[in-house]
Image (tube, rainbow, N blue to C red):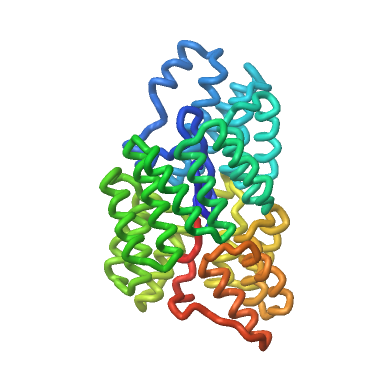
Length: 399
């Protein structure tokens, strides 16, 4: 699922990372060395330690650094900054919004929704809180509530963050034209290189999941021209190269991607591309990242359900998928549970979840392929998109 800053989610694109800025909800897409947490803000807090909003802003920057660098230790720093802010002014809407953003970053979406609602009660005009609420409700599978939050955010502060969320809501309904229009509005509104790269990347993602590799590659290239340090666009180029059969080029690109940002999604994509190229996948770094995220309090059963189903133990995949679905009954979790059950030899149990994952009109090729495969295993008529390559399944997911 998409990572909006918004990202999910990103995704964390498989998994989702959420972050939010109070001044701008667009991402800060650069390596940690290029985009450190604002030193000016830290200096200000040394002079004015009672600035509770400054502490909340610092916390959101730490949450964003966790996403930008792939280093989950920043979540602990964010938690500390928010604890200081809460001691100074516990009910302030920006402080509570920061707490909601941290909960979402750790994939605690029910808590994120509760905190965002508390922030909205404190200040009904805080657009940022509605953004976090929309993200959390999407992950909880409550798409109607998510749409209402997006609509309110659009009314309060139309701009890149609101348009991006509106685009994703439209895409989940199967409205690709609407999703594209909202992203085009976001593109018109974008003024910084970071904003521009962010929107162009998601225009590329929309094209990719429509099956237009050439257009997707063009948008990724445009994103990198706007902001060369924007790693998701580089990953997009690797993705299109892999799906287009240019495996050597894709692997070279993935080497650069994971050197910059070793997120689990990118490591899985790299591993699958190596397997497709006839090489051996090395999951050592992926497993190390898993331990780091767990130690930082990030719950990511979704990624491990998908990974175990395709590359490990189907029984473990079912365990992770059930845990994820119990917390977050969204389309991606339903698809993950369906596929895990199928891979564990239980297609009859899998089918209701596969139907749920495809019930809204969302035209992602991976859930469609999974449902078709499950139906075929049960002897039911179905159609599979022949252009989809299941050996590169990670590349079809929104992270």
